[in-house]
Amino acid sequence: MVEKPSLVAPYFLESEDQIEIREGYSDSDDCPWGFKHQGIDFFPLNDLVPIRAVFQGTVTDVRYSPNEHSGNIQVNLTLNFNSIYSAQYAFEPMVRDQEIGKKQLEKMLVKKGTRVKSGDVLGYLVRPNSDAHIDFSLQKLFKSICPEEYFDTQSKKSILEIMNTDKMCF
Image (cartoon, rainbow, N blue to C red; front, side, top):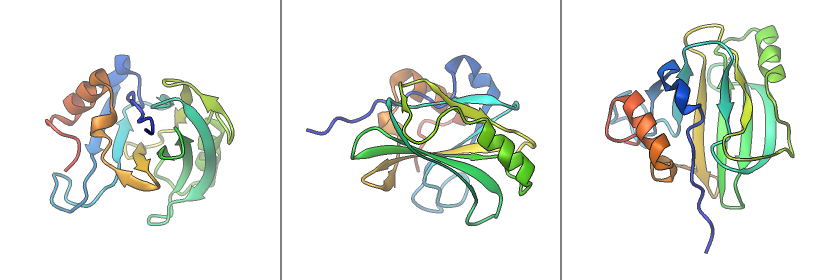
């Protein structure tokens, strides 16, 4: 049987009052935010908030690139738990400014091949404006899935409280 990950929140629970969640996971437009979104968007309220590994694993990609839809600069990070499960993080400062993009890349603490433990800091989100966020998704066999059942009890409770709802996936 393939081991399933138990996820911790990508932010430190002690700083949950410093995080907003504006979009959860949805497979359709019939959700509170009105559009399909196969991840959860975490909006830190301060600059350089640490973002952590949701499980132990190996970083298999850290890539600086423009967002395919908006053209904004972002740093994409993939963390593999095993051959079945991976976590995708997009560190999105929400700007096209190359200098801020380079700063975001410099604030990453890991690179391809780095082994991390659950809770290790992966990097810090550069927040030049209030739209800067981390787009987080959990994948199973390279397909985004609702992560709700994978979060540990404390993390799930924290996320649901921040979202002010009883479920994080719609």
